[in-house]
Amino acid sequence: MRDLLRWVVTRRENTKTAAHDRLRLALMRDRMDLSPEIVDALKRDILVAISRYMVVGDDFQEFGIRRLDESAFLVSNIRIKEMHRAPAN
Amino acid sequence: MTGKTIVITSGKGGVGKTTTTANIGAGLALRGHRVVVIDTDIGLRNLDVVMGLENRIVFDLIDIIEGQCKMHQGMIRDRHNYELYLIPAAQTRDKNCIEAEQLTALCRSLEAEFDYILIDCPAGIEQGFKNAIAPAHEAVIVTTPEVSAIRDADRVIGLLEAQGLRRPRLIINRYRPGMVKRGDMMGQDDIVDLLAVDILGVVPADDRLILATNQGVPVIHDRRAPSGAAFSRIAARIDGEDVPIMNLEPRNGVMDKICAIMGINRGAYSHA
Image 1 (cartoon, rainbow over the protein chains, first blue to last red):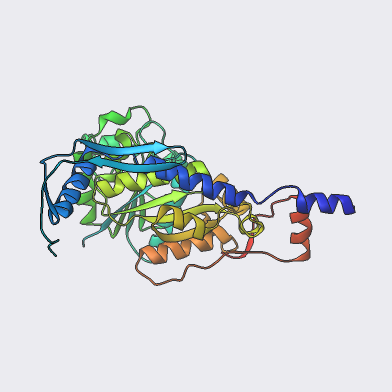
Image 2: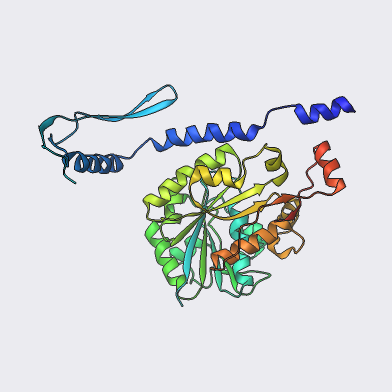
């Protein structure tokens, strides 16, 4: 009986944490499949932000999400044409 | 009268969309509203059998849309609520025979006569789903505390938001407080954290719901059913009443402990 109780109590780790962690990663990966409209909107917003500090090319040479093992990175390249002397607000 | 159209959707099948639609519909009718529930799962109709109205079908949704019958001829009055009506899905047609605009036009006509129009959405994210969400002012997502259902819910939330349904609200169905307490099931906080949406309610797993469905009676009519109580509160929240979300607690009687140790699901909880 004692052994049975111990088996009931210790038979496994909590599985909730595993489910939660796996899902968090899966959802992040799913949500990274951005639609072309969203990618364009993101590019536009980033261009607006960068343009406050420097003059850049019309479009990105490279733009996208790169995955490396468990992590993901937003990688983008754009040519700088000119720098403003001091960042504008 | 200007009614509100609400779509009940989930992505994944088998999580309880149809049961939820039937119970929210009955709940809103019990609150004194005029309600119509529409089954849009063309070819796989089920809302009729869950509501116990399968023997009364003469016309269906497609008949109304195609003008084979008048709108009122295609609506079946519920057995328990005179203010609740069902428009059943067509069983012998396929999902591509209606268009989103036609369903939207029907809902706009219904809104002139009813307070609430509930649309039971088919599983999946294909045309049937797109048709079902087109007329909606609001969306309700049903999920269970399982990884597959939650992942599909996330996908559907994205699609709803892209359609302009900005703040879909979440119902967590078949919740088992005992398992959550033991750390073996994701709790409502975990799920809300993952999906980042507002919660509309939590429905406990409940054997009485199965008994009610077997008889074609929405479980909300069973006063002893914890799931029925949960659906009543969900209906009140949809109706704009401020009902707090309760944390479900497992029952704590001696028999419950014995059953828990033996792995028997008693299927009822102290308060839902």
